[in-house]
Length: 138
Image (cartoon, rainbow, N blue to C red; front, side):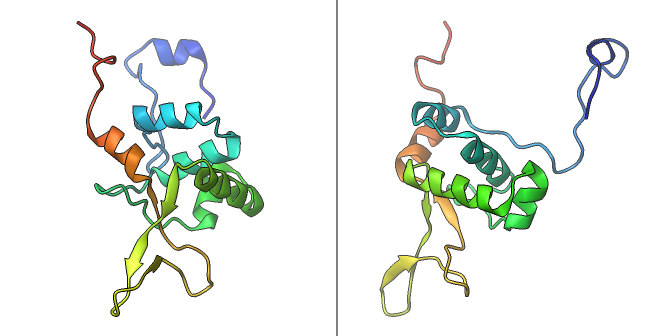
C-alpha cells in the first residue's frame, strides 16, 4: 500500500489504514529472542504470519502454507525453510498430544508433517510475565 509521506502526515486521515486481516503484532520478548538468535528473513516473515492466529497458552493457530504464502509472498520452499529455522533456533516447537494410552507424541496431520506448533515454554514465560524492569521507565 504505497502512500506518500505528505498524505500520511497531514489531513483528517493522518493514520495508516491496513486492510482487514493483514496486520499482526509481535510481542517485544519474541522480537528480542528472534533478534538474539539471528533469525533470517524467511523465519521473520513466517513468524509474523503465524502471529495472526495465536492462543492464550502459546499455541499458534493452524495456518496453511497457502495462507502464509499469500500474506508474505514466500514460496512453499521458503516457508518450509523459515519453519525449520524457527524450530532449529528454539522459537517454536511442535504441540505435544497424548493418546488414549497415555503416549506423548507431536501433533501430526494425515500427511505426516507437524500440524500445530507453539512458542517454546521458556520464551512464552518471558512473554507472559509482562514488561521487565529494564523496560519500565522511571
